[in-house]
Image 1: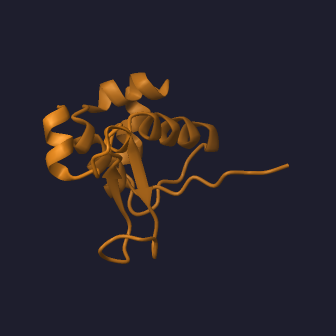
Image 2: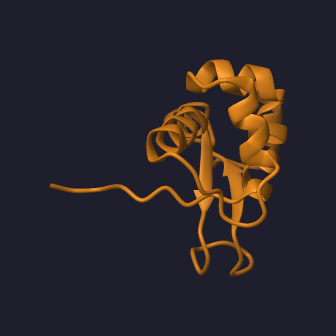
Length: 106
């Protein structure tokens, strides 16, 4: 039996919402959570602690929307935690997924 560990900080959650242009209510709806649950998660200090099912729903909703969560030490310009928006179908058209490609698609 495998278990997935969901580690996301409140700062990552706020940054992910900003990248997606979602308010707390919209994210709560996408994740199947209540608005107060998302509010509590964002008000946390450091890594969000809570019900594993709620954290799983939250992370799944963010990933489905194109968010990639970066943990400590993973490939990025720095070694800290972060978030980034995955390129959508940029490579299927033979283009590299650059910021200008993403901007053209919006």
